[in-house]
Length: 163
Image (cartoon, rainbow, N blue to C red):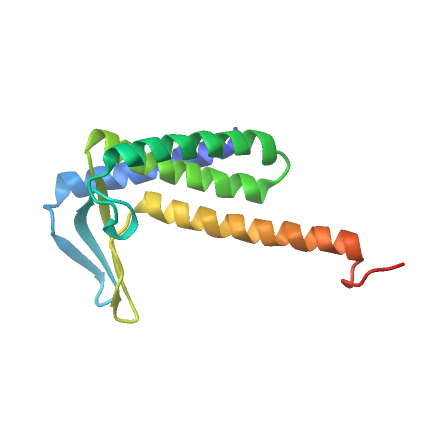
């Protein structure tokens, strides 16, 4: 249940921030937060990350529904007693649902976090995208941690096999 509350928090934060952008800014408007680094920019995306697959909404609907079902199944089966895994899946679930809501309701995703990283104009993104990325990074950390633990159990604490 706790993991679903995390997902719900992500969804609410994502949708509230997107509503603020849509209701308070015109498309293309940009507000500097930290000059040359961070801006709030009203942007729309009809594709996936970096604008790929523009206009392929039916594909996003199908893929997102499959991903949401898979994440929820995995949360029920594998996350019991593994809080880091549960948190990573909850972040991914909230992010997937947040962008799915946009695609269904608006037929496009509202993006607004605009960054320049070492002069690279990074594609504009949103809270849902951030949650997805953080969720994937946390999942990778958890997988590496579990792999290390299983190797330590198999080979002993110092990583060598004892006969």
